Length: 226
Ligand code: DC
Image (cartoon, rainbow, N blue to C red):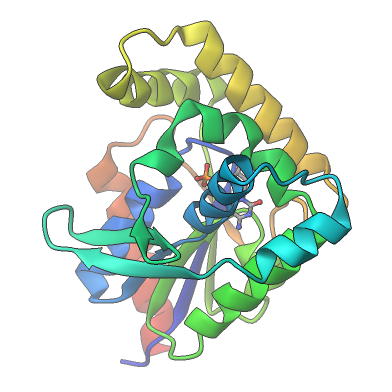
């Protein structure tokens, strides 16, 4: 069976990373969470008071950022390292979520992210999730999946996930954040979120995790033997 690149793109909180992790585990592939990279850059900018609307500041700051992944045996996936510091938990914080879409819209941040992601894909055998993976990062990927789910289902799922970490959070806050990120991610000038023409749509609103995994595995198997 040949090794392929699998891309999963879609709106926030539609289950992309869950599916990407499951697929990678089943196929013995490497899972790469490209959103974690934009989140880590956002954390760096916030900590260092970098104005992400000022391109000169952004370009200088990016020179001091080193991103890496470190496999975590306990979770079975990779943690994000920002200049050798494990920031996996910090980058999931609401404060980072509030700004990440603005930071990810910056042209230089995008060039930086895309270049790093392409380097990670040179060996094939990877599953990468994000917004522009099938359109910009790996336009020649063998299997492209565009994941969607009903907005109300996405808010509910995200709320449950966030509530476990922060019981103060309200469903309205989660809904507002998702709507804002969907809008910014889809309407930015540089590589906006959109379905690649050759991507297959997977609507998981009414699917269990196992059902969606089986569908995706079937598609992957067809590409790996083909
Ligand atoms: O997948 P996520 O929610 O962790 O991603 C965080 C943000 O990063 C998301 O709001 C948009 C941005 N992002 C992006 O612009 N391009 C990607 N390939 C992945 C994420």
